[in-house]
Amino acid sequence: MTLPKWASTKIQPIMLSDVLKYLTTAIDLQTQKSVVIEVGGPDVYSYKEFLAKTAESIGKKRGLVNLPIIPAP
Image 1 (spheres, helix red, strand yellow):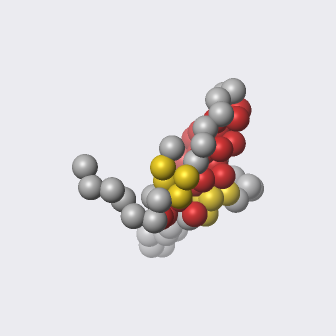
Image 2 (cartoon, one colour):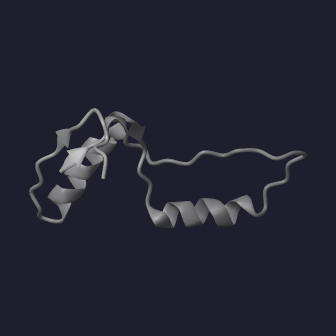
């Protein structure tokens, strides 16, 4: 699988159940103005690392190759 340049961007995957818990808790937040609350799991991966871990967890072996440009269709 070819990966674009941004595949080295760091992410913090989070379980859907945790996101739902945060959203239902946020309903009761009392604030004077708009706020941004970022959520993420405790682990930090690049997209490439995350794709590799995901493939491994479902029993698939995938070759991942960085491609610094996105090819034209």
